[in-house]
Image (cartoon, rainbow, N blue to C red; front, side, top):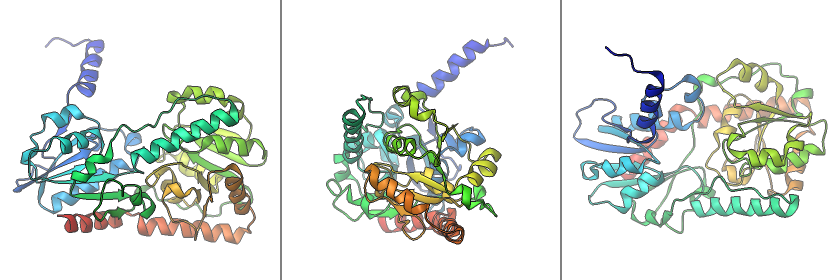
Length: 387
């Protein structure tokens, strides 16, 4: 058999990944009478690395959802939320339920020719809200810093199609759900997110005299949306406060270059991309840091917050993180620098016992309400109501 050169293998691999539609057909090889199409992500049903699996909680969400439909006796197909080409090849009339999000789901709704039930899964705030939040913050940065940055999180979804769906499930809380009122007039269903239970770890004997000054911040693409510019200005004025930044600036080098002076300070630690299943994270970062901070402008429920809480970090978040953490953390009054800074100052003004107890409360809350079991049961109950 002739050997295929490595460069040709790479071309074929890229062609398959980016050109050919990826459709997972009958994931569980069942022979039920009903069919469902999940329009979300296909990665977890194909080959993936351990690090990729732990990179985002959507990996575990989609698997729990698929298994829930299986328990309800549906054969399960899956396509990626952005794969419109796959959506075009779908024979939608064969499905009893089409569930998902993204441009592929929107395409199927706008071209529907059947009596399927369509259920939209909202993983964040409504697109026009998200877009305005990013653009407003970029304008603030331009006025305050004299820096012009390009938007990186603009959503192209037009949620007017929600008028033609049968159900809406929102990841977040009432604040998140209310952002969809303009387009969806029926009752929305609210669901919390989910943690990786096998990464649950509560460090004992943490040195809170030191840890309380170390704040963990993580972001995917969209550092401005996550409020990094505000934090950099705060930490520039507090040499004894430490900011651990987890994430890659590869797609936002304009931001990195503009804020290089602040990002290279001694009290700003660039952790790079963090594998939350690694010993470096679980045995160093989690032990060293006392809080997770996220003044995010628009989100669903950030995994960048619940994952560290699953390791005992105390949350300091904005209202737009859509988490009710006031009993074991802080919710910023606004995105203004002085409100974020005040909450941080208040956080630092406690005795060791308070940190120990509050850290445990945050950990226990996540364990109870964000477990795989809690998410699965909540999702199943919602499906039963909609269907």
